[in-house]
Length: 507
Image (cartoon, rainbow, N blue to C red; front, side, top):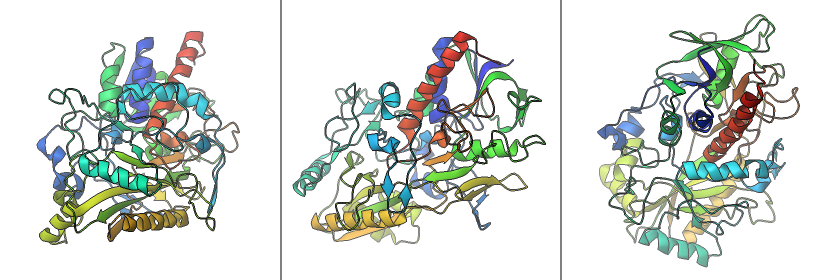
């Protein structure tokens, strides 16, 4: 054996699992397809990040009609948390139960909020969660306060909070994962810059899976990380009940437990690519659910422009709004709409990089006068929204989002409120299939092996020593960022694995 546990991937699920398992003494080998993301000046350059996609993969995927696209994803130590906006919210209580939406009903989870609550507490401590309980109108119960105080609003945003409250809304401090010491900003790793949301953090102040997962794990002598080691397939024992070998581009590895944490798309693709004569449709696929029910948030960026006022805010991403999370407020459309939060401040360079055709003067004016938002509506499961692989081995992603009517209502409601607040110009941009940052589903967990891939401990029904800790396990995605739930669940699975090792229940 090369290790007791092999973890494939080092993002939110893999990195957090490694940190949680490391003190137990079991030998851990992390196989990461990419390398450390370079620390260099272009980390903070919008042209490099958003136009050249310097840190994203160059590979092409295909949609359901065979059209090629480049996914906005990358392979690095820390996974896509290197680029996330660092908003870490807990799922609501109702997100674990069936919930009726305009276009369907979400399935129930095999666990409840209470099963994740203690691990949410740990994940928030590990990932520098700044927030304030009691202001989010539908926040779930907590046993502990946020480990760090909320990120302070800059004056323009503080005034906007008061104006939103005057309209009857309940804005709250957005929980953010940043290593920020507000009491001593001169020594604080986080400097509250404009290059946070969507950028890698040059000063390593973002609470990402490299900084908060992999680095602490590697302080233990029983943990190893091998970079630039792409896993190509998994091979089972003759009876198909165990993973015996992990095949990479460079070698072969063995472990007692194998954990997939490559992301909802790539983990499903790896199981499909590992098909053999006894499992012709892929590993762990007795249910024919591997790759199915791909979920991705229905997201829109929003720029609200007040021609009369300049917005001088530098660190803007401090407000969350959940007044539309459970209901629209419209008796003629009695459905949940979703979540709203600030974007990082849109600067002229960011806007120019994403819309190079716009004249420089117009770009500067828009950026100076805008306040920027991110709108999220829950996507609903559909077995035809799925990951498959082409004969050449490349990813084919079929995605026709469900619940778009609710997203249109969310945008319309928010536009009306922004007009009332004095923003006559409101611009929206929907995210398309290439925006895979909030990928989930594809290997859902459940009690029934006929309708799910994983059991409630995220162990595959078919293969005893194969687990999954990325967002693949989610049967529904809710309307809040999935990162914190992935982290909390990885800690929960780690506790299960520790018990299994302690009891000797191993291959």
